[in-house]
Length: 127
Image 1 (tube, rainbow, N blue to C red):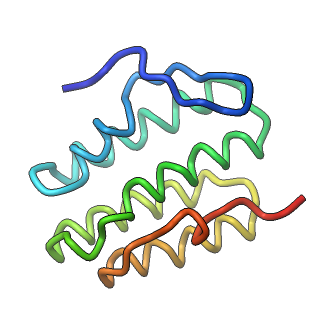
Image 2: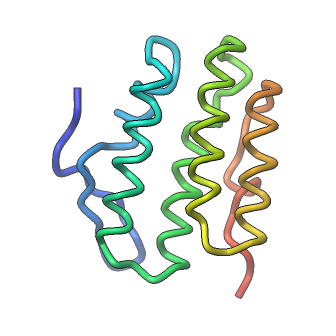
Image 3: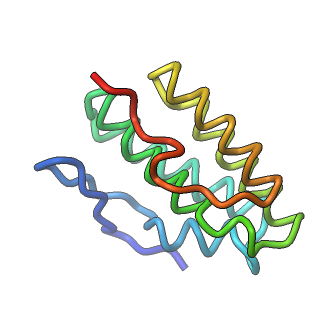
């Protein structure tokens, strides 16, 4: 199921996305599929791009999605962790801050290894 009109908060601004983070998690975690997971992540990325946000706000939204996807890695079966790691690597390729993108790639490897993510693992670089 896809939720239309999901709102992703960014500072004082909100971005309407065609797929919610809850829907992405459902597509990527147990019960989902590789194709559904990647499609949901790519739809979210497309919506964020279309919003025309500044790079730091776009990166913050993508980092939030990474944490949401990887926060329960230790409870996921190995095949699901691999699927989530693939999705996180796609997200890493969209992040403009090189240091943050690098941390997100490390996060993907940690998820695949069954290590839960926290917000501090992929927070944006200090300005």
